[in-house]
Image (tube, rainbow, N blue to C red):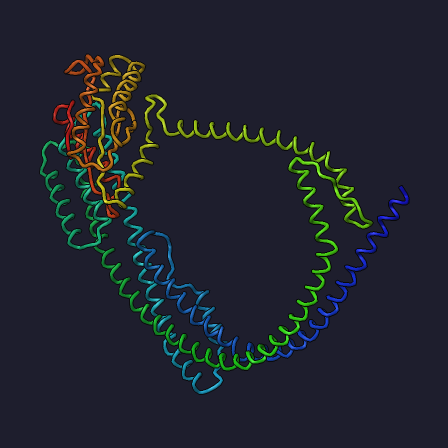
Amino acid sequence: MTSVSGHQTKARRGLGLYLMLILAGVMGFYLLTTWHSIQALREQSREFSNLSGTHFERTMTAAELSRDAEVIAAQALESLLGTRRTTSDISALDNSLLQIYQNIRQQLIANDEQEQQELDKLDRWQQPYFDSLQQLESKLQQEQGHLQQQQQQLNQLIQEIQTLEQRLLNADAQPSLFNSYALAALSYSAAALNTERRGQLSHLEQRTQTLLDTLSKESGLNSTQQNTLNRLKQLSQSVFKNAQQTLVSQRVSLASARETRLYAQKLAASSYSYFLTLQQNARDAARIHQRLVTETQKMIGLFSVIFIVLVVLGVLYVRKKIIKRLDHLHQVMMSHVAGYTPKIPTEGNDEISAMGEAFEVFVTARQRAEQELISARLEAEQANEQLKQLNQQLQILSETDTLTQVANRRRFEQAFDHYWQQGIEQRTKLCLIIIDIDKFKDYNDHYGHHAGDHCLIKVAQTLNKTMQQYNGILARFGGEEFVALLPNMDSHQGQPIAEQLLQATRAAQITHEQSPEGIVTISLGIASCQPDNNSQPFDLLQKADKALYQAKHNGRARAEIA
């Protein structure tokens, strides 16, 4: 054992000595070329310091000044746009940006008459521009005040609408002309908060005033209705007055922004002109520096060629004495990995033969590790397959109504968005059918909620079976309401399908003693549209809901087209 160790030590010294001599020669030449390169780079550095200190730094300062002028102008425009979206406190003038701009300006000192003329032109537009920013900020603050007041008025309108809706939904209350007219007046007032044209605002104000005058002439108003009417009058007057003031304030802000943008363009143009002057001076200095760079590159190129030759000679030696033998040993190792058992090369008195001997020791351990790895991989694949199945089941459960086993509202909203975008991209129509079980509350009161659940399940499965023959989706929308989406169809194409759904529900013959027909029936509202970027899915849903209301109004158990 001692003799073997000594033999291996002698072999390592043989390969190591040759490699060390090669590396020492290459490294010595590398150090020599590096020293010459450093000397050339020092001379370049001195020239570059002059270039960067005299020209480049001043040019970058001028460019930064031009950029800051544009940033301040962009911030002012963002503030103007911000008033259209939020009522938060937005400042058109960032004092820190102005301070940065002024600090940069103070760093610029003209070196010749041409540069002084450019700086004078820059200073001429600076103060008018900052003054216009101050004026724009004041106008935006006024506009923010009106918008905040509009938000408060909108909250009041919503409270009044909710109060009237609660009265209409009260089971003991009867629908009245007063509540309908009051809701209409509130709707016109709410619409005025989003109106951007004076003609539209005047029209809404006239309609609102007409409704309020009609309510004022109504006789027999109780104290609650009279108090509601008085609040509506005061609130509508405040809404339309503030809306007029908001329109005026927005136009004033826009005019001020245009003036600010004009001064910003003049200031940016002056800054850019000064930057171009400094840039030309920097280019002239850069040409001198470029000559030095070219000479250095030639010298480094010559050294690189010699260095590459030395490296190639070293590589050829390493390839002949080491790489080929290592490659043979590698092939033998890969054959063992593939399951074959060729003879492992161990002849020689160097480190490579020692590696062959060591490899024999690890062959058995490798085979054992490979078997363990295969077992672990199989277990991981089984676990991944189980996880995939669980994810699929979870996806189905998340999109299915737990009671009726048809698509739930979440799945409907996803499909609605998909078909809507498809309609926009392909310019195809989209048909929507809202389905409501007639007198379902009476069914629950008479038969009980357990029977009501069975009724919902039976109706849902009947409708879903009919819808399966069409390219669309049926989903439970909520309570006793269902919705059907039919892409690439208009209302007239969807009407026969609605009739099939109606007749299929009749054919189910679900007993309903509280219904005039003695069985469960449905009412359907049909609507369609051509989706585009100027409309929303809610608009189509609202049209179908109005059609459903008309079907209920006309006697139920029928389908109506919006």
